[in-house]
Length: 363
Image (tube, rainbow, N blue to C red; front, side, top):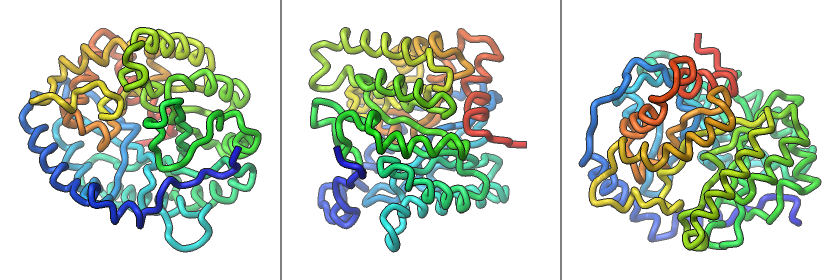
């Protein structure tokens, strides 16, 4: 097994891909498509922390603080946000291992802009989740310490994409991930450096790997683990669609087992990404929040039932999820799902869990 995550392709290769250079037209079409459906904002006073969004500048695909602010100022009461690693603004010079430091520096700069109050009341990037190649082992500590120093008191942890599946078409992340990476000795040596620094681990996996994550969580009970996007349910993708019911049942069973690990929290969202195959991005007009709530609700409710509201948090996952839904609509959908819960439970789902996990003191 390799002891270092290897990039699939360089940014230079990406920037010269003619298919990706035409994405600006695609982004414009998607914006026009999203504008076909509008709704009144539900419960506009409900305080929200958006615990998972990205900011990036990619060929034909710009989503920086201006775009994000335009979304968060669309009517919901977004108090703060957590920036999550997406490979943006990595350093070009210096050791490769230190490259992710550039993203933390960038996000902290955005956070300082937001904290000035010049851009509205939302504390954008109040928490920062970076990345580091923990597969190199204990040596990763120097990268983590540098990110803590660069984070202006906002650096909270790392995300390492470890998603892998038998279907090679799904293995399209930024890094080549080996099967069983979370069980690797070097990976775990790097993972062990997180808890002493009070850093969390955002887990990006596919649902067949949930039990591997549970085993990791049991071995590191003092490390806070945040499961992204309800565990990467791929029941609607090519190799799973014919056995979708079986795949969902496997996910449900695995999530029930993972919930036994008290150090694991779950982000409720990520289902708008087109590669998951739910199809909302393919509709002639965008789905309403009620349609989304009916589709996503049973999955979110299973997570809430097993983990409890105090260990679950709704997330926008923007801009990836805006392939299927507008920012104002996605939070309406979440509020429809949460309508059955008490006021305290709703506050946990939309605000308090995220504040606790990412140690956000917004006062």
